Image (tube, rainbow, N blue to C red; front, side):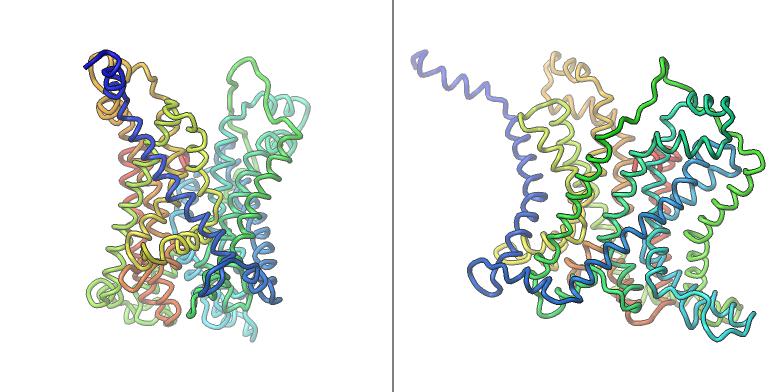
Length: 569
């Protein structure tokens, strides 16, 4: 063979075969993130049972006043939830991060408990508490006062907003706490020297400095509230207050009108893009930094006489978000009839026995939820780790695009993504609707942002020189990843897996549109039991879900650290 002919062969032999792996991973990411969104947009223009495209789907989706009203109601609800979350979370975050309020660690744990309690279980708890006829609060009110009208009615817009805020205020709390822990005390000290008290300093100095973090939390809460399905299904439907998610579900009732549902969901994407643009516009006009020659010191603010009123506020938030709904739910789980109250003759384990040993679908749903969540978390962690490695080490020219795609599902409402998955993978030739695979892929896609953010942060702490040492000694890039990167990220990967598993195991907004008769998960079955009025069995199954969640979080605490969820979410 001549030297000229041998040159292409030597070039082929020198080809970096790992490049094919990186390109393949990039293709997988594009397939699971971009493809459903493209199919969603195309489906919104497709002719039903025909070939071609039309705008009629949009006319159908928004051609009736009640459909438009549902969208308006959703925006009103989202604004109310975001405002109430600020009222709950910002004072609580300031008190836990910067003051000498008593029991700050306990309050942080309660905030975490409010997050890991699924929103629909909180809704069930508040139905038991504040139902207009049989709720515990109203029964006590009638017994004490002899009134004929209930004191509170959970089936209302106010009830809907409060229940959703009880779960979602966690996001504003985490964003605000993280920002407060970075703000030094020099400017606060200057305000105190000039005569400002602790409260005035907080409003005039501290809060303006963390305004970007609060705004980010508000946007996340608003977007999350638009996409939740469980709470509106339990509260808004009986309250005759239609919202987008319940309306989308009606489009999926027989006959399924996926093209109308797609058209109805598209404006949610527009709202998301508009909010992100508004955030940039608001933050671009001002600067939010503190100037100091050193890192700054963060000293505890002495509240003095305000210590106990502040603790009372925190205790009230913990009471209405965690303890009250949890206590009545546990009571219902161990009761023959939850309305009979706390009495020995009303106690029973029958609900748990029925759920765990007789109800075939309940046992299957527990297995499905744990299995699907575990596999989806593993897929999300491995894929996001590889993408984060490509981005951090700049292995592909378009690595920045891959980072954007990994974070994109964070700002795409879960219900919109679910409809995109249905449009992309339910029809032939794939025909994945009702299978475990479509649920796992959808769950993994929803979890990518959390997994990617965690893995990217871990990789930034590992210097590439450690991998280069392995390669100098004759090892390849994959050996460097296996022997250096993976061991160093072991704890971080476990923490990320737990962070992904917990919300995935509880996911309803995505599952409700993609589950089939044999792939029901606990969240969907809980909704079915609520429609059947079996609140005792529902509470027992919900308690099983909470126990599984607490066990997984406890394992995370043991391996990664006590506050890993509050600091990494």
